[in-house]
Length: 210
Image (cartoon, helix red, strand yellow):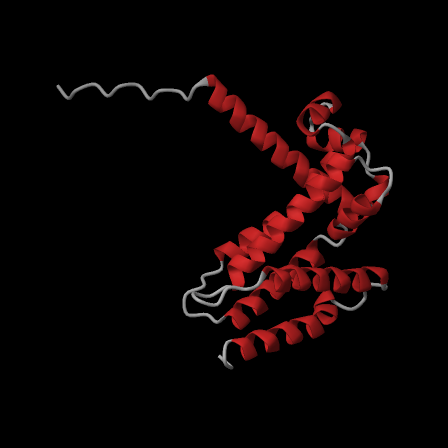
């Protein structure tokens, strides 16, 4: 008679609770991003988010602290998504200039799919009524975004200077603002194209025309 297999142990209740909490946060952020994209930042309310996500308003405030912080996390999650995409891009055998082109492709695709996201980030950052803690969260996200760019575009013995990465991020922000303030009939890739060419040329020159 074959030995009886031991019953699979259930994960501790605390682990299950934490996993559910993370799943709830991710669902709420996804719903909030969708509402921002559909209605704009100013029109999104906690009642809408609560109804769409199936999460009580009290739970939203428990998870995020305030509507402003929830909107900030939903908007700055674009940095995390782009950063994860850059990290997933295989670097072996690709020049920094080629990786930069991939990064611009990802940015263009993301802004096309989430046109309101960076607008919310900028609105929250420069609004005088937003709590300092929210602005600080956005700045931390930007710093992490810059570091992702440094890591993605550096090569052995050829690190990308952080000031150059910050300049790239600032230029991308400027291109986005120009696109967002227009009628957006032209794809954002067209607004990003001059910056893409400028930084690609710089990287090729730095790397000896590779």
